[in-house]
Length: 267
Image (cartoon, rainbow, N blue to C red):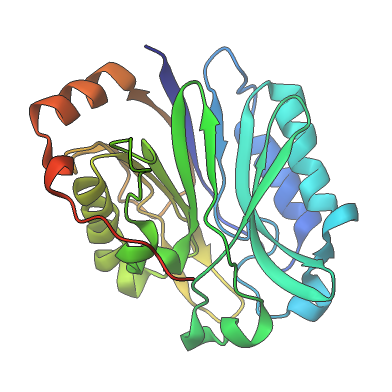
């Protein structure tokens, strides 16, 4: 069984400055490549910070420099690169999580739950579809920030003849420091209830409104135990391993999935 080496990139983002953020992230990633990592995870809106200035900052999906930068990073480093950016497509604006592979493929997930307390629901369109990608035998559910508060949207929904829909849940965020407790708790709760790994990457620093971000990026195992847990509010890069055999053993030993409620999600 394959393992998945996952790199969490906790970064201090410069407000609405994609060129500087991409340059700094390239420097922060250093020589990281396929010899040490399979997946590089960047924060939500890594190019701009959590801007509501969508009409000015969102780039056309087809010509987005931020998406092109991700594709080039994936190609050059030989790793999948993921993170969200503000894009516009067919007259709508999205907070879009991009999954860029070394061979040039791009998959995306549009954030479903828009943070109304910041007016995100007025500046971006709501995503309509869940997205599950596969890497080295791991099926990964893609999510963005506020999605983490909505367990029904994230709950395992396996096909009738399957036990699990996904093996890891990935959440990129700009989650403010005053609510760091819920961020940490929800990452662990989503892992426990779905018997899966959870990858949570948040930013640090302050945005243009003076709002502080504490980071707390975590890699959590299927029992809710942190494998990577950096509480300090500083930029860092850490790589952890998702162990397929350990996940399978635990699911067999503790088959809570057998008592899970079957349901159909209405979108």
